[in-house]
Length: 204
Image (tube, rainbow, N blue to C red; front, side, top):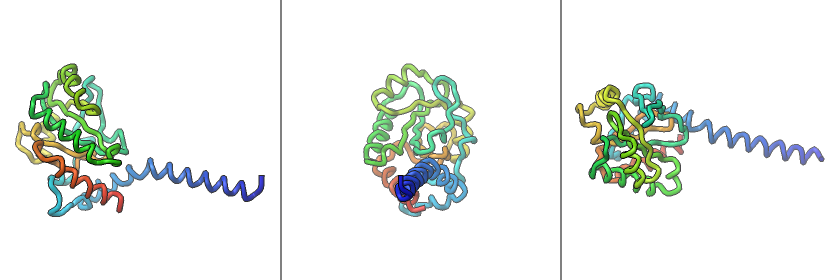
């Protein structure tokens, strides 16, 4: 094999390595940057949601899986998570919001792979009933937030006690809670904010 061929293969391997490093490292670095510089997320008068400032980190509120295992939001470092809150079972208004989030993800087009959806049951969840209801909205995950953590989150978000189930929250890839919305918001308005947010992320 000639020196030119070896050099070409070596260069190709280097490029592949750099691409892999970028794919896995950029979300971590980006979210850490946003965590240290929350003003970057200041969307001015264009935003439809409320910027959570300071950001609420993944260690401040403890989400659980329905089986009782802890679920740190930042475990999937490539995805942003849409969290809606409610009781068990899920009523008509709840199903309407689940549909809204489903439509919102579809609206993201090629970026939809970067969006996760989760239903957060406040208190003990009737997991079988909820799982059956969530099956209508394929891809929606089920988390549980105990009453103590729900109260803590309400305080940190600055909303009235008992009103967490009237809101949607966006978490960044590192698990920080960054944006707050009322549950009855139109999906187009969240979509507009996410487009800006993704645009800023691409430009960092």
